[in-house]
View: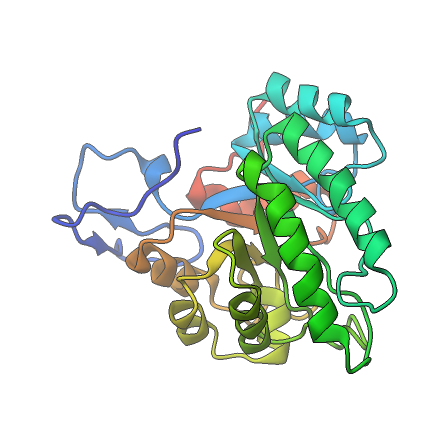
Length: 290
């Protein structure tokens, strides 16, 4: 896959007149393809494209312009079926979750190990380079130590495949009692694990609810951010103009900072998926493609 990139160092990005959600920022270079505008969007097959069965979502997503897709839970199909669907569609496998949220739960270390092994099997088959290791819900004083220990073991198992482990803080409104809830907490755990294949999965929806101060937090943590997810706040629907997060501005922040990894659309469409993708048309997605 060829990643979307920001403007070359000698070509500063500019806004076109009347720039808004309906018009992306472009570079001064007239030869540069419009599709090279940030962000590099990935579909999400756990929330989007629910109008068709899982294995049909790949073709639809590729047709409208996605070049990658994440699946929180690919385990309803075999690893071979998922891998074949990625290959046939030409989509890149972006992210899988471990099947159970038990990473920080004392006494469930064997469950985490088994779940991670299963996720790693799917990642290996599909060529997926990232696995989200869910912490789970607990207030046990041993949670951090447990999570760090589990992540160190998983890091060693993932290293031969070149797979990154991701930690995602979640908001407590949707996930009461969840252990990992803030970006600073995730950074602390990443530092404690001390391995170079453990990173932050920064979900703008969750962090707007928990922290706000999005642009500065992203810039401060860009060294550990491996994956970003987006959704509208409130409601977790399309990240368009009828919600409170200024996504065009955040995309500029990412572009200026040189972020060139995936930005995944982890949201629940208000109606059907394709109608709801109009917000993404300036970023290379064509909802009405046939």
